[in-house]
Length: 119
Image (tube, rainbow, N blue to C red; front, side, top):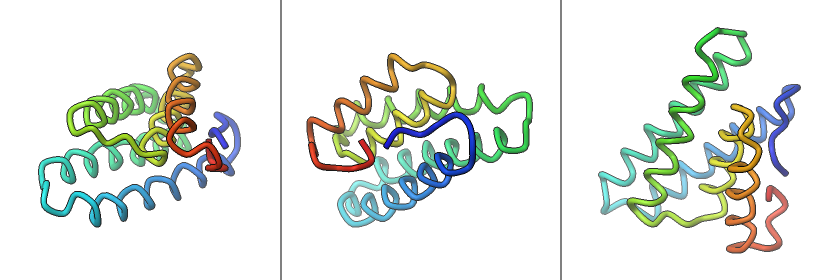
């Protein structure tokens, strides 16, 4: 389920996704420390942006845009084509109001895992 820009339910879903992606990254990319480090950094920035958004900080959207760009770069550079990665990317784009890119990210994740309820 894509995140809503309103309310805490979507934000909680995004935070759960971030945790799951981090756990998956540690298992699957344990030998590729660069990929793991960059993914963790991008997801940490996404988490920071969400916290800033909840606190109505003025730079929240800028941080979320940076997180989305970082996630996209990591996905492309390390070929991390997982439903969770695309779900987090879609949520980041949704939170900054880029619905087109959000839908594209969700659709890419859905192609990988058509039955994933998050997508």
